[in-house]
Image 1 (cartoon, rainbow, N blue to C red):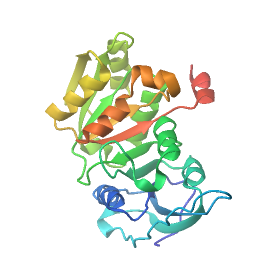
Image 2: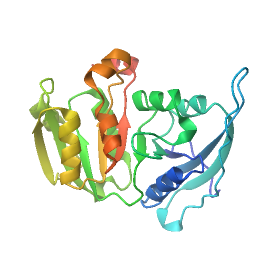
Image 3: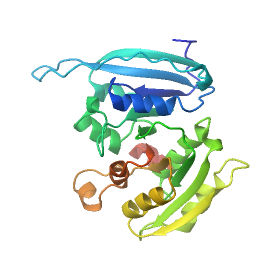
Length: 265
C-alpha cells in the first residue's frame, strides 16, 4: 500500500478473484491515469454458508500499480464473506471494475445470482472489462433516462475522460426522444470538449448499438441500465447483455435506484 486513503477522494474498486479475467481488468485499469483517486483491489474469500456447499476460495495475486498511473493511494485487501454482500455494499465507489471470463459471463467468483444482480442493479458505476488496452474512443449512449444521466456523470468524473474521442449516440426505438436526449447530453459536455460524432440511430437499440460499436471501433460504451427483471427483461431483452456478448468494447453502466429516481423527477 502507498499513502492513506482519504474519504473525500474518489475510489476505484477492482473486484479481483485472481483469474485471467481479473488480469485483463487490471491491465485496463493501469493503462489509464488516476490522479487524485484511491484504488482498492478487493479479493473476497467465500465463507461457507450454513447448509450450503463450500465454494472454492479466490486466489490472491499481488498487484502493484506502476508510478505513471498516478494514484493518490492504493491498497490490496482480502475480505471473508459472501461476495454478493461485499460488492453490493460498495456504493461508495466512484467506479467498480470487474473482469469477464468469456462471452456473456462475468468472472466466475460472482456467478449466478450475484452476477445477475450486479448487472441489473450495479451498486456504483461499474465497468466490465473485455479488453485491457487504454481507452481511445467512447460511445456515450443516451435515452433521456436518469440511468443514462448517471452513467454520463460517472464517466466525466474519470481523470482521463477528456482525452478520448467522444461519440454521442441515441437510438430512436419508438420510445426515446432522440433530439432531446442528445441536446441534454451535449449541454453537459465539459467546456472545450466537442463530440467526434453525433449519431442518430433508428431501430432496436440492441442491434443498432452493437453494429455502431463494431463499425466505429469503439473502445468503451457508456450507458444506463433500467434494471428490468423477470418477465419484463425476457420480453424486451437487454442491450447490456447484447453488448457483453459482442465483446468488442468495454462497458460502463450505471443505475439509479427507485427512491433516487423519484427525487430526480
